[in-house]
Length: 96
Image (cartoon, rainbow, N blue to C red; front, side, top):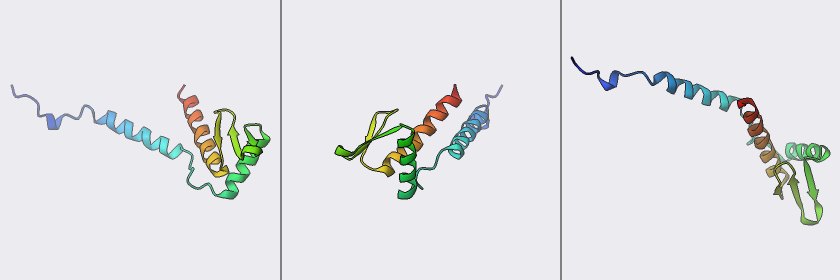
């Protein structure tokens, strides 16, 4: 009996397709952070300060992201970080 041609084996194709589709779904659901301008960042940071999620430390000219303990000297960096951090936590919550 002839052995099967390894090039004809498609047994793993469905797993590869499913992996690619899941990656596309995650990409589509991910939060865009590259489009954060200064005005948007400042507005988000102001909202986070009002919600006690961010603490400004004026004497050191830094902003502290309280849930993570991370410090920033730029509102844009903080806004991008917070969007990514929130998206990551939401993704973890959905996975559970």
